[in-house]
Each structure stands twice: as C-alpha cells, then as structure tokens.
Length: 148
Image (cartoon, rainbow, N blue to C red; front, side, top):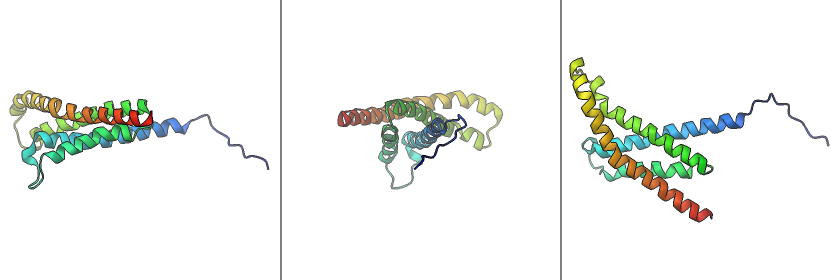
C-alpha cells in the first residue's frame, strides 16, 4: 500500500502550540499564585473561617506546578520566571487597585501611589518570592532525583 504524503506549507504549528501552551500556563499559574500572595499579605481580607495558611498553600501549588506541568527543564525555568513576574504584577495591581476604584482625588493618588507600591513590593518579596521559589526548587530537586 502506498503511503500518504502530507503536503506542508513550511509553517510549523508545533512551535506555535508550545508557545501558546507556555503562555496559558504562565498566565494561569502566575495569576493564581499572585492572588494567593496578595491574600497572604492582606490576611484581614480573607473570608471568615479561612486561615492564612490556605493562601500559602496556593502559592506553594503555583510554584510546584511550574515544574510538574513542564515537559523539560528549559520549559520549567521559563514557566517559573514568567509566572513569577505575572504573579508579581497581579499582586501589585491588586494592592494599588483601590486608588482607582475608590473616589480618591488625583493629588491623593499621587501621594499614596509610591507608598503603596513600596508596601506591595516589600510584601511580595518576603512572602511570595521565598514561598513560590522554595516550592519550585523543592519540586525540581525531587523530580530530578526521581528521574535520575
């Protein structure tokens, strides 16, 4: 039986699919981990009956899923860097969002914005960075040990 030959246009869809997959994972993991980071720092906004530990669990899962959902180590590192930056952007955006959602005068926004940005970044560095990358590196270490 003759084999069917496939005509191609020279355009490779595998690279596009891989990039779209990485983008989707980066946006999803980063946004969820960033929301967890925001809720861990602003624990007074947590619903009643939910402890601050659950916010840390969300951040840890975000860090671990970066390595678990990647096909290889290069993808894993790309996902970890991208989703951390997306999560940091979500964290900072949620922190300063009240300046535009509530009726603040423009002068008050100008005065409060630098202070709130400093608080958001300082809060993210101690909780989000350590928790996220701690879980990521632990998962990469255990995954590397089990594969090798």
